[in-house]
Length: 234
Ligand code: IPE
Ligand code: MG
Image (cartoon, rainbow, N blue to C red):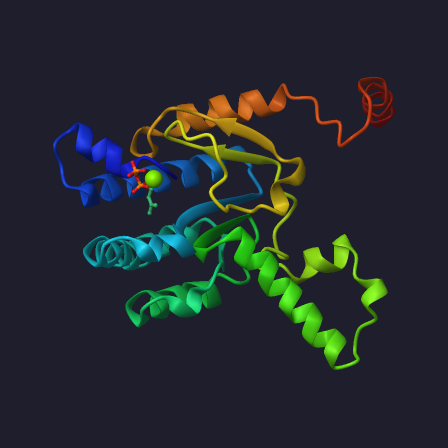
């Protein structure tokens, strides 16, 4: 969800106004996903690297996050949405961690959609964490190194509870992944838009989903093989 700062700057507003408006986009996009039947939505809200921003900006983002968790709680529960997180959430201040843990706990039985917040998240950190856990299992003699395969690694990732990542959307014109779901994005379709996150709404989401629908996903196979597989599924 990139471009909040530039959105504000263009209007001569402080950066936190961009983040405020970004929270409106979060609400609109989450509602649209729920209505359209998207099974899981992961929002890159705060990266591990974002801790390096000025103290005042980090504080305003944490305050916004707390407000979001308190204000959206009722709607998340009413809509049967399960809230989860990926990332080093132990770094979050109590003012965020408390309402976050409460909502995670209370929404754990919800089934209609997964809303996952990437908080203090980094893709390399996620993979590093999995590697470390595997090393400890090997060191304790619980795991044969030869049995480490991609599936086992995937099961140790923070995102293990999520379905495969189909579509990755990046706003604000940047053409990079910035440490987001590096492992999971191996075969994801990528959608880049110049739209700044506070301007991104339901129409933009539909445009991205429409583009996704027209992509041919081959997973390393040939075009002909994919045609045969698709016909077999009809
Ligand atoms: C994304 O907007 C929000 C967060 C990283 C929390 P930015 O703050 O990165 O906006 P730009 O890139 O400065 O426009
Ligand atoms: Mg940015």
